[in-house]
Image 1 (cartoon, rainbow, N blue to C red):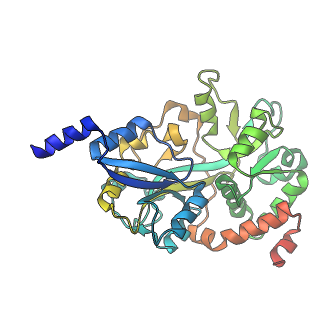
Image 2 (cartoon, one colour):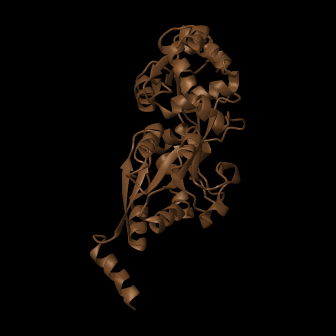
Length: 346
């Protein structure tokens, strides 16, 4: 009786005395407010989301504060940063009962220190109208031709998650150090480098007034174009450049941070994040694919085709060489050094 009365009082008088759970996320995290409010009312847990910047910046915040954690849960570390996160020993393993519902290929940490929440693909989008009548590139190598390099905008891998993903795509395709030769040709052909995705997509891309009809973005971007047009477009005005291994496979994870004083609340949050209703809310809020096998996709995702042959790299290899690859890329693309100079100069 008393438990039932406490629940009623909580619903009536709000969450003033509810337990607070701090969730550190990257800036792209989003879910429907109604779902969040329902979780808070049903659980008695007040969620406080702490935006940490992009995925790399968010992880750095967690690492720098691990002796005095600023959050209980971290969402948004992806497979490009996974090995680093695990080596820093940030997480408490948690075998959520929801794990059995997830796609097995997404579980990259068998110890379940982090659990997959969603996945997606970074690829090259093109503006259909701007390139009407043009034969599209058939391989990544084709992009190095001047007629294509001068039409492409990419993001800086040192400051952008999709920029890093595309750099890794080129490593997967051309090997190490062959990827530098590819980038030197792109540079000489006139490729443009933006700081981040928003700048590249909404300033440099021809769809929004720029002069570049090719942009590094996501396989879901054409679907988003239709969805946010509010009926203006029945089919996407943009497309994905469907060439072999041009899309990089990304998985995003959630993990409970060591040092939390709210372990049970953190576990409830993880279970909720993996529940079917939340997983089905993710696509139209974060424009990625849900990790659950049984989560239905919204109809507009028919324009967000999953690539048949995405590029992949082992997380351990990424951890070991990521910094060097970014450093060498910077020397070649931004400083104008030759690939040989980039590899040999300190």
